[in-house]
Length: 327
Ligand SMILES: NC(=O)c1ccc[n+]([C@@H]2O[C@H](COP(=O)([O-])OP(=O)(O)OC[C@H]3O[C@@H](n4cnc5c(N)ncnc54)[C@H](O)[C@@H]3O)[C@@H](O)[C@H]2O)c1
Ligand SMILES: O=c1ccn([C@@H]2O[C@H](COP(=O)(O)OP(=O)(O)O[C@H]3O[C@H](CO)[C@H](O)[C@H](O)[C@H]3O)[C@@H](O)[C@H]2O)c(=O)[nH]1
Image (cartoon, rainbow, N blue to C red; front, side, top):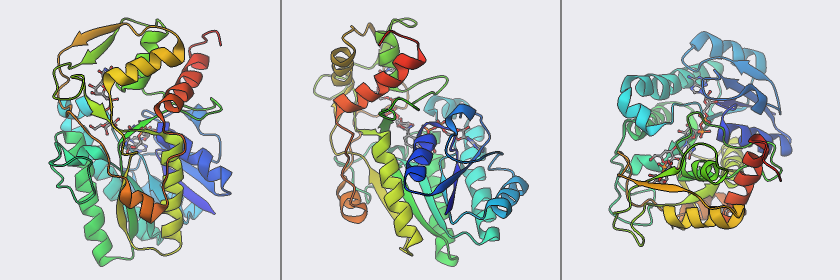
């Protein structure tokens, strides 16, 4: 059975394709390679195209006849969204709307969508449940929330059924080191800390040490990309079996501070992480931790890889090879 994976040449999408292939599905990647990598597409065909290009999508649906779509394609760098909001509205909202139109045209009714904890903004309660108000703090979060609204409205009047998965912080890499996180520029904490530990570039900037958290640094809920892929598979299976639409947080329920991550990076790599304490990064919120109860009940989702040592060991294993460091 073919599954169309939009954004499948990117970080999470590539891990998804590997997981799909391991379960006997054929992932067809549709990606414009704006931030993804041709070398990360290994488990099925790559169609180079843009989700804003209706004709390219129609041709792809006609050629491959996928049973469902998983939609990762987006602009994801929060700071870039503040500097260039129209790029984010055009790509994240315009692109996904065009994809929905093409799906309707092709008669494909099942969609798994990458949403984000960034749609919650600064939450009133912690951990964050799915019914927490959504008041995004960034253009990026606004665009993801807009897509969620487009999905809800479309599902009301059409056969579309969707799963909107609100990820917390994706991290880690395939345990065999075959694929991993290769954003450029990289803004995420764990790869940046590993880079600093490896002695590549200058010290890592630690953004904000005066938050109201146990050690003054931001708290996040890090989820291994393998566990994310497993949750997508579970969501996909439900939709293929005819389940109704649903919205689901994907996190572990455990919050870690930036300093806790840095000390685990030092323990795993056996190297110090040079740090430059810096002002708060605009758009960061102090604390984001998921309530994973619904994912547990609905998807049977119990992370297998997301303890922080495994997350960082797998990421380090991938980057060591990429940076040609001695084993
Ligand atoms: N990385 C995280 O921690 C995180 C957290 C929450 C949500 N998400 C969401 O998960 C998804 C995947 O994130 P990622 O970290 O793998 O990002 P990524 O940048 O590695 O992957 C995105 C992929 O989409 C492709 N793409 C972008 N615009 C496109 C377009 N118009 N047409 C076709 N392809 C296009 C890129 O080339 C890339 O391969 C995104 O939607 C992101 O918002 C990520
Ligand atoms: O070089 C760095 C990188 C990050 N951080 C800090 O580490 C924490 C985590 O930052 P990340 O950039 O790794 O992750 P975010 O929580 O900012 O980002 C996550 O949430 C975003 C929305 O807020 C998007 O969804 C994004 O894709 C997802 O990874 C933050 O306190 C950040 O300030 C640093 O101190 N130095």
